Structures are given as structure tokens and as C-alpha cells.
Figure: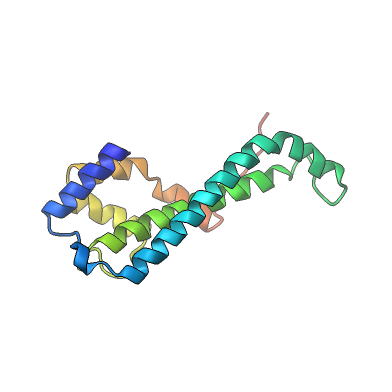
Length: 152
């Protein structure tokens, strides 16, 4: 991803899409840094949950408050999906903050619109990034349009 992101930024710069340092909104950038810290804390919490979940799972079931073998894994899944959605939105807002606001990167574009625009404006690294970002999966999770089935 580092090579793709670096190449993508180079392509955006060559195309005149990136803001200069003076054009950055300091308040927005400050907020993005704070959001980045929050996202990082969620990753730390996710890693702890990953390690603690096997014994936590049995503990939750044993409390008799409604957790069962069939639904306790939702705790894990919902936290995972929350982190996933937060990082995709952070990624989008972070890149949009560095771009000049002109078509097709104007205003409040969706992740799908953004990836589509990158594919056309950055012919080398846009498609490479698009191959790494699963917009339909992100949208399915964000809108609750996924199926879940338990398989052994």
C-alpha cells in the first residue's frame, strides 16, 4: 500500500490536484490528526479484543444476560465492522483534505465516486488503489446489507 499511496500522490501532484502547503486548512488538518489518533486507539482496542475474545466469549455466555453461542460473536463482528468503516471514512476524508476542490474531487463525494475519479485521473496508481479498496463490501457493511451465516 505504501508504494501505491506514494505513486498515487505523485500522480495527483503531476495532475495539479494536490493543494500546496499554504492552501491546507489548519483547523481541518488538526481535526484529521485528532481523528487519526482516535482511529489508532480503535486499532489498539481491536488488537486487545482479538487476544481477549476467546475467554471473553465464554465469560459473556456464562453471565446469563442473553449472550449465546449463536450471537456472542456479534460483539467481535460489530467492533471489527466499526473499525473498518471508520478507517475507510478516515482514508477518504484524509485524501480529500489534500486535494484541490474541483471536479471530480469537489465537495462531499462518496468513497465509490472518489475511487472512480482516481481511476480516471490517476491512470497508473488509481486502478491499483481501486483493486485494494472493496467499495461494495464497505457499502454493504455500512448499510447493513450483508448476510451472515454460521458455518462450522
